[in-house]
Image 1: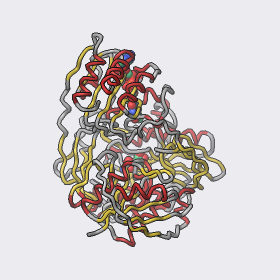
Image 2: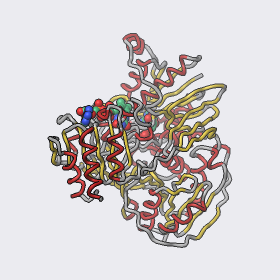
Image 3: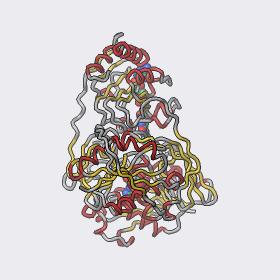
Length: 260
Length: 315
Ligand SMILES: Cc1cc2nc3c(=O)[nH]c(=O)nc-3n(C[C@H](O)[C@H](O)[C@H](O)COP(=O)(O)OP(=O)(O)OC[C@H]3O[C@@H](n4cnc5c(N)ncnc54)[C@H](O)[C@@H]3O)c2cc1C
Ligand SMILES: Nc1ncnc2c1ncn2[C@@H]1O[C@H](COP(=O)(O)O)[C@@H](O)[C@H]1O
């Protein structure tokens, strides 16, 4: 069996993330990037599933040159091989285009049983690519899964939604996005880091996937950022040190602001 | 005037507050039409009429409850194809985003998620990068599909008598693949819903596991209770109450962080709160950098005193 894990390379959230003023896209050059931390849970889950059965774990990313770092980290954690979707025409692609390209790549991989993804990318953070992908491929999708099991060609997941906790079943192949509740991602071991150097990574262009450049990228995006403004830093308000009556002073503040 | 479709967010007919907000937005830019999917419409009718729905499209197929997300997207797509609306508005929660994602692909339309405001021409405002930037965006292809965060606008009541239209939907097999085999509705706490509440009081590791003082202040203020991931991971409060990147994003009028340090993943879930208050015994805690009012002190004494003072003032 083959499990494909989708991993994204994202700007480090602890750095000052910003936009490229030239075209209002996320600045991916000025800020250090890394493997989206929410995708580590998907990698970990795939590795755990693969340990219990005869399965290969393929990691797939779509992104610029430096996105190969995200693949490398996943290979160091233990994934078997990688696919990098790389093409200069992809710059500025939105979620519909991203899902289209990844769908074509999965078709090219062909024999896969399960596609695991993170619950959201930490830059765009839309949580829509997995559902779009499932829609395009006509596959079932179980989103926001906090507990997962596989048996007899069926995937079963627990999804903790807003108003209910649900158990969902679907036949394989399926797309499943997992939350940070599902496991504790491992760190790459020294052995893993050495082994990753020899693991195969294929790079596919749009031509390899039969996708026209005009279908993707900024000019084909189905939505456009018209402007962005940096939010003024929240000025620090009054901070008092408790000397016995800070609770009352807090109540005063809340009353002043009409919350009481 | 073109219709603007509003996907009704409800639990067995109990309509959530966000739907009233979406109807309010829809009315500004078109004819507000509610799309009600699933059972329980009889209990929902009054709420939709009170917030100005001009029309209600009603789809009552059992598949909507038996399968996840997909049938909702399919039903919404069929209503949208029949009505050619100016836009489709959906609540920005996990399920809403997934419905929107599938709908956008079905309609070959652009999609914007997590709008905090919608202006003329369906130009949206979003808050991105942990609230550090505000972005104006617009769908440029097809029917704008927009998910809107709770508390983005104040719902304005307008009494109507909606025209009700039953809609029959034939579901393709691909929409019926992710089967719900078990569903446990969450118990109501009697407190407001976390993602919709006007006031949220949250507790973190600093509670030491006792959420009593946090709940006491929350109840004095009529607030919802939230928790940091550290508190949730310690098993002190259920995951459904986690605020942050991997929990709920809230934007209440007032957010009170108690015994929470203010990690970036926590801030990601509350940075758009209008007023922020923190109680923390460490004066260096990063949360203080974003407060309107802060108390350096022990939450175990500060919160009960504040709760008592509030109760006294309320009389
Ligand atoms: C992938 C990922 C996703 C995450 N998602 C989330 C998320 O969604 N939400 C989230 O919250 N976190 C999230 N985190 C975790 C986040 O990084 C922090 O670890 C977490 O927010 C810390 O919680 P805390 O502030 O309660 O605990 P701490 O950082 O330990 O802070 C506790 C605070 O309590 C104060 N304190 C202690 N005792 C008292 C007292 N008696 N009175 C007053 N103050 C006291 C201390 O001074 C301290 O500032 C995520 C992390 C990762 C890696
Ligand atoms: N460019 C990409 N390359 C690979 N995987 C992606 C990409 N974009 C999104 N994903 C996957 O889809 C998930 C949700 O992403 P998003 O819809 O952007 O929040 C991520 O956690 C990834 O697993």
